[in-house]
Length: 136
Image (tube, rainbow, N blue to C red; front, side, top):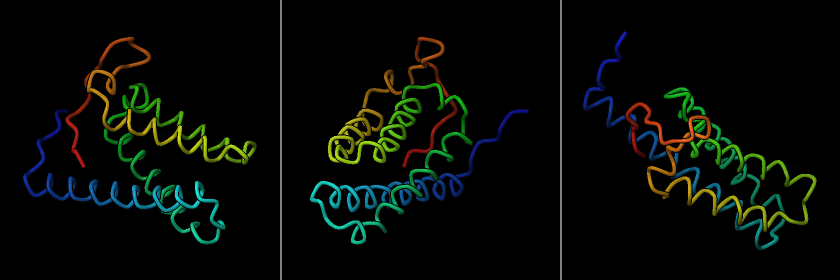
């Protein structure tokens, strides 16, 4: 069964929602990242950490529900690598700043890399298209 096209209103609601979610995520990453890099006591940036993790999880769920192929495209794979680096915060606590910097650099590649790189499938070994994205 073919999916119907989004109406202009539906498109705008989805785009604004995704943009707002991304903005909150960046705010959370900035607050938590500043706390980590400047060695501020955790209680002063914990709310930003929670914001970054919850909005990140929501954006990831959004992408997976929209098109499961996100998981095998480089943009999804690198996001999973970032999650792996986050898990390393526990056993490698002394390396949090270095891990955070690696995560931020990977984020730039995922968000701003060329389309051919972001949509490259690690399974198919070539660029694969997905459903039309709602940018945000």
